[in-house]
Length: 115
Length: 113
Image (cartoon, rainbow over all chains, first blue to last red; front, side, top):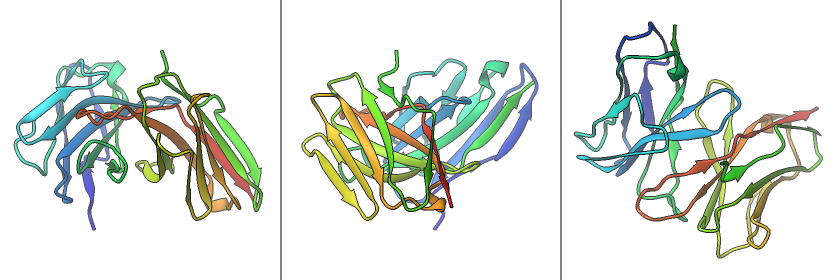
């Protein structure tokens, strides 16, 4: 009963380093998302995908890249890490757009600190 | 410009009493609303939702009320239990193919035994 799995759980990066947050889902969902949550704030959408091979920017895409080569996987790439990217990152998925009966399911989060 | 506002950062309630969490929105295109519950060090989990064609949806101890004219929704938890202590996020969607949810900042609920 895995659902949405994201790795790593915790990571410390130095300024300028790059890394990839991995996300996989086993629910055969078409839609996948990456959100970030800063302290005391709500979740903000970074990128989303409505299917394999299709990605689009969300509200806060700068400094990030994504790819969606398979239905299951949706990695988030941080290039040239900056302190402003210190945050908690959540991967999520849903069968289709969030409408009645279609809910977004979240992973457990990845805590990233850039120093 | 916050489109979804949860103006109370925290709420403390006695066990067995009612908890009422409030949420206001500004975008009249929102037509689907959800509440998520989040424990520390975990991802948000879906709690309950409501479509704009309804004004009330109930699921066990949880009821969500929607007042479209006031652009306001509320989550009622009756009776409140200590295990309900968590951060509650209100989220809204305007449909379309994008599927984006706009989240409020959350309200931390503490239910005291």
